Image (cartoon, rainbow, N blue to C red; front, top):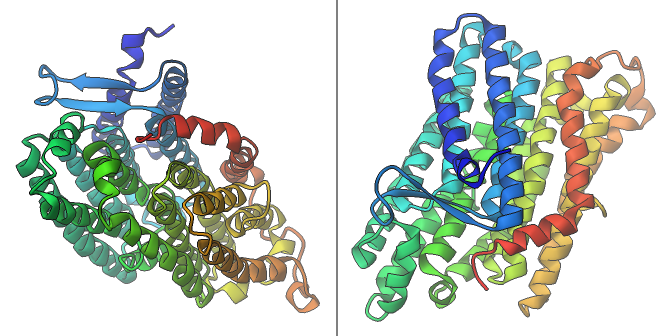
Length: 495
């Protein structure tokens, strides 16, 4: 059995292990050995995160000090309920995507780059976990930069013109976002003299007078900088090209994981660095609510106008991130809890949608939405998976997307802004307007099914297992929503 001290080493051990693998992989020439090594370590990371989650559920949040110096001079991690849930989400979803990549990655990227892909996703997962666990502003910034470079790598690895263009757009905008975050950190340091989140809030709370403008400017810098990285409307312009042109596993990682970590960091800054008393006295939450609402509606309208399947799903991510910003912007406990729950729901659902869409494209050699009419006859299992995930995005009861939307509605009512229900309803109807036609045309219509041969393009079940497992987990996230939301609520950073 692991004792308390050993369990508290899990966060740093997982990050170090993933980074070590990233440097070992290039030394291995045998592709299957690379895959086995990576999958073994990622599986271990999942198990360790389950142990970590169980420990937090029993004992509550803990702080881990790294190195010889204690805070505020040393590096610290803080792992509470939110960090434990999101850490497990990232590790598990990355494992499923890596599993899928074994069967289809070489059909999208040159064979010689397979090992490089596993190096990149090892670094990426390590840095994403670092962002989630960090209790220090500057180290959070460093992890964000590592994740940005690794994310650029998994986009450009396809080595086509559109990938180079998408990567450059992402890199330029992300660099801008990084600069804004760094300026925000500098302003916070100038006011508090600390980088450790554990110390900044206590200093800021006693020095608000005379620093109101500086506090507001720093909050806006953090919001815009991390909003770019988290695809907040209208700062999302890098996302559609990057997500749609990247290899399928990369698209799934970008949408399910990469755009979530900066938002976790932003939530930490809001509530662990500034605190609700300071944050609530600014216009920042209202701005988030406006941009989240616009993202939900306009993201869906843009998704509805797309002709390529992966690009449609990419714009859908802009809409879904809108729900997360909407929940944070409500400024109450339930809204924040549902923003984090929606990260979990969206993570398992959207990764599955991209993998299913990638399977359609791989088996047919086509990209257009109209090309997949009747695909349900040729690939019934894959379309079944796509259907369940699409229904969750629309908000069909029991599935996690419905749970998110229902509770966000309750949070909106609790905040005294009942008119926001119209935005949630309109967004759900728009979600239905672009997911339902794909599903219906995939299954029905004489013209759609004419000439199609049953299961003629179906992939072997062993290649669909990660998608099936993700679907089961997605359904469980819906059925067990009460338990998950209660657990997340225990870790909310304000009372």
